[in-house]
Length: 286
Length: 348
Picture 1 (tube, chains in turn cyan, green):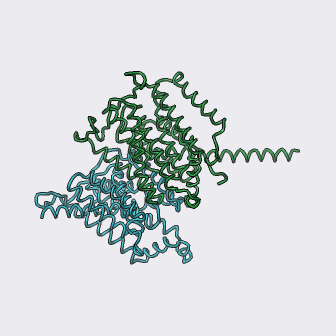
Picture 2 (cartoon, chains in turn brown, green):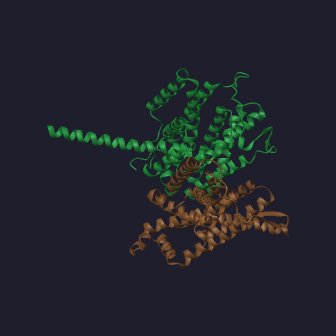
Picture 3 (cartoon, one colour):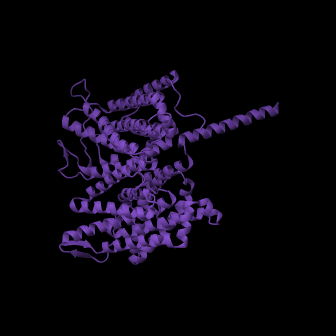
């Protein structure tokens, strides 16, 4: 019984973790066909903002919000300065954002120093039988679900979501209706970045904060979004569920390195079998 | 595009052979002119240029952008090391360091190219394979991770890579100058071989595939076979370079696989341009020089500058920094000339 609960917890935790680190990337990639290789560094920035805010005595929850806003604004800046020159050149975007990622790692190291900081996780430890887990991880799981449902609702049921989806489908038509596509692109990128920054802040208490932390997430985030395929949210959910289960179970049985390697191997095989991702064959959805 | 790059048939001109010979002889005379430290630097530039060229060949002439040349580079290094330490000789391990990465390239390449996945996915998968290898290597610090008699040491790498033994004289190993000669000669051989390949019939099919994959297929070429071939060749070259790198520094570590190393390779190729095979070599030399010059004055400084170079180069120089600058200079020259000519007309 305990074992089952623990494995279930592991799977749920891996799933939520993946959802958090992917959601921003998925929104940007799915909506704009822009791959942001600096995703890991956006997570890192969110974590740093949160870290600084907490050190200055701001409450953890407010720090989350500050991180989201700060990284969102930074994302808008990046879109204006870099990304907007590269629309339609998907490989070039990949390279340029890789440059951005290297730049951000170096810059953060210069400004904040190469050391690892930590934010104390609230709520202490919880016990399932003999196993101790950080109680904060349950908060993380809850927040991941809230963000997922919130983003879905925003895209599906609000006017802003409709405008964004419409513009991505047919920018010329949107422009004819008086909606400036450039602004929509900018705001969508900003929204994706804000989600990523928020994710960085949320995972910071569990992962620690260091300039190179982004590297640990980028591979997972990347394969999850790519394997998810063209439907942003459905793809992220299904790929996160698949990879989360694999990584949760393998982590439990052996080591977390092996879990990650398994995920990456499955992703490669999956892309061979379904070259356009899990949702590639779906007719509709977001 | 005015002319299709690298598609001229037949053998290279005599002038080209002459140029290669002159440069090679000049390079081989260097150990008499410079001290040990510059020689060490030049050797590593020659070795890394091999990787750079393999990427330039793949990306510039076949149109495959691999983010994972470091996977083969690192695998080559580790293959050489493990085999040389186990079998107590170095010639066959050097060959193994070509064969094993080539096999890896064959397997991954088969998955990707025969899966007909898009460019983006190909780049992502090569990236992921590199990350897997890096993660796996970093996780081998325990004493249970042993191949033959060699401990893999995880994060710390293997600091006891044997120097290359000279096969025809017993017990002697290549010294610093020897490694320099070896790497320069290897670079020259690979360069000439790739150049000849590109001018052969196969090479022209490579370029045709880069220009228009579908049209090449409609003309009856199975583009998958050609792409796979190119991918395997590039993997073999990168693997060989990895072995030489191990010989050069007597050290291999998981850093050889790292993402920053992969980014470096792309920066070399982007700076040097991928329209020629020489471009990536020049890019590699330039950037390595820059990195050394910047040194480690402040932590992170070099990476900041590399990141900036990559971003600017991608946005502003689509064909590569040096080719674009060359184009600019040529335009300017023509402009000046035509103005001069007009001025002459007026004065008449």
